[in-house]
Amino acid sequence: MKLIQKDLADLDQKILLLRLDLNVPIKNEKIQDFNRIDKTLPTIKFLLKRKAKIILISHVGRPMGKKDSKFSLKPISKSLSAKLSENVRLIDQNIFEIKKNDIFKKNEKIVMLENIRFYKEEEQNDLVFSKKLASLGDLYVNEAFSCSHRNHASVSQITKHIDSYAGINLALELEALKKITSEITKPTTCLIGGSKISTKIKIIRNLITKFDNIIIVGAMANNIIKFKGHEIGKSLCEKNCDEIIEEIFTLGKENNCNIVIPEDVSVGKNFKDSSQNKDVNKIAKDDLILDIGSKTIRKIINLIKNSKTILWNGPAGYFENDNFATGSFELAKEISAQTKSGNIFSVIGGGDTVSVINKLKLFNDFNFVSTAGGAFLEYLEGKDLPGIKSLNYNE
Image (cartoon, rainbow, N blue to C red; front, side, top):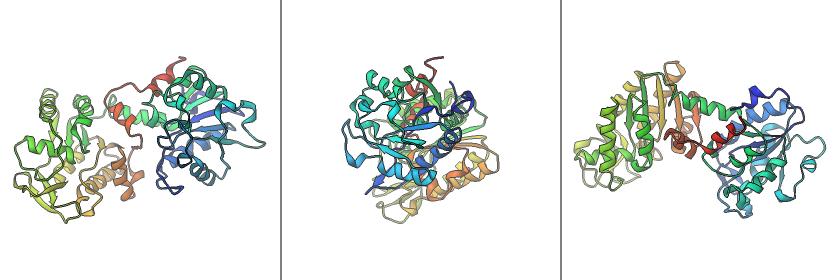
């Protein structure tokens, strides 16, 4: 895989097609979260410094192959213009009508194509469309790891028609993920949460062979608490999960991986309630499990302190209510402290987990924070990602 910052000596006046994932929440034309935008700035600045001309390609939302103003990239182009102190003109002309020599106006260094998903050919991974995109530039750079699990024209098909490279952030993401999957420093601990155990079973199955501890928290843990014969009251619980849970514990035993579940929990009668700490064998029929309890927090923190590598995906509870955010917050603070002390290598992923660390203003306190979502999870499942695999197409 060729890397943009290492394998290209001359970028002067070269036209680069830079595929980004700027799919950020926008409300009333105002951006609600700038994390994904901010992560692209070092790459863009690097390319501008090397005197490249840049065509930005991205998407927002799911316009289903039709032009829709509510999914326009206009707010993002304005934001980038301000952050870069460089005008980023949005081109809303039909891509099939654009000619390479007419893209840049005098003294322009960077432009942005309108939402690539306005074209049905993008998600169809259309060959003709990808060729047209490729014809607009001299080089292609994938800086959208979070889209790299998609077989889309601007992600995987385009690399067949143009000299292609991995971007700075994409390379960093892959390097971080290798350190928690194939180049691991032990002891290793995976902290995994979420609402449905069935959606994470492939990840757990893959990581059990690599990790010393798998800690299951959040609503996922409710299934196991119930499986162990305890009352879970009105708590969120997935049906027909007994076989999955049996498999997790069997694989854990076979691979000498310690499967950790809550010993105590924080409950309320509803999502707006105050919290009450209870052992898992003391839960009432009208209780809602909404966080891990104090004993469980101490146990997990002790495991973190005795680990060298930490992967965290999924909060420990219903952190939207501060009364049930203690588990997620305490774990975030401990992983942050151990990372800053140089005791562990930490990788954080998943939208809700990122929301937790943003609430605490700890985003920059970990070795790597992934905003990739689906691509992050599929990589952890051990799948090949089309956008990554395609970067080796011409090698």
